[in-house]
Length: 292
Ligand SMILES: C[S@@+](CC[C@H](N)C(=O)[O-])C[C@H]1O[C@@H](n2cnc3c(N)ncnc32)[C@H](O)[C@@H]1O
Image (cartoon, rainbow, N blue to C red; front, side, top):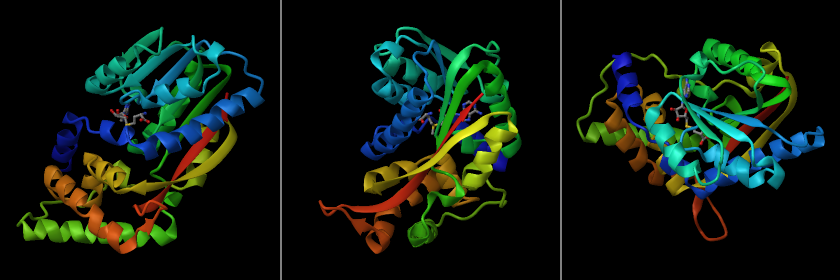
């Protein structure tokens, strides 16, 4: 049954609306700005090839190009994703910005890029989807594709410290409200309890160790906080994997609807207000920089 849920999830591409929110652009901008500054500090004065792992709608590449010094923007970009739909989206978004764009339809575990061919690899908001073993294999594979001195950067908002302690009641209320919503609609829990990868929150220390275990030098680990408002929470709650992880065992489409509906009641109970009166909950992003 769990396999059925995963198949249902794979068929739909649902990341783009969240990637277009102000909060997502802001926090990924903080991460990418820090990565570009780090490369400059380390004496990098140009790059030939960038690999964007799990490219999605190409958002990371768009932001990377916003922050790169002008003369570095001639770099070739390889966008890799296991979803053909994502690659089509990325192409339409990037073809005006990137002169030398190559799309690679593959999972990161199975990618076959030439050894020593990439200057920087970026893996935005996606490493947590993989099992620990697949992460290790993938990061090792990325290291082989990088040139000596090349950089590997990644970030995630799905790690143990991503949810500050004082925000945990928000998540509990959201799930409780969503379960009640499903019950009210007569939707029952179907099955097993096995966890999807996205519902596993590995700690910061694990990710610091992961790059080192894969043969990289850990250069920097930073955390950035972003105040996420209703719309962003509704989009993130609409990720099929997110909703399926939070409401394990329920039909995915119903779980998505319930998690979305439960955002506002949970925000009203636990959210803080910004200067415009908008309710928000703070979420943290982990950004790791490593070097061959
Ligand atoms: C949340 S999106 C992130 C997109 C983009 N990197 C960003 O930061 O906005 C996650 C992406 O990872 C892709 N993905 C998930 N597992 C993958 C894997 N094993 N290999 C390649 N791509 C994968 C999905 O298809 C999806 O496009």
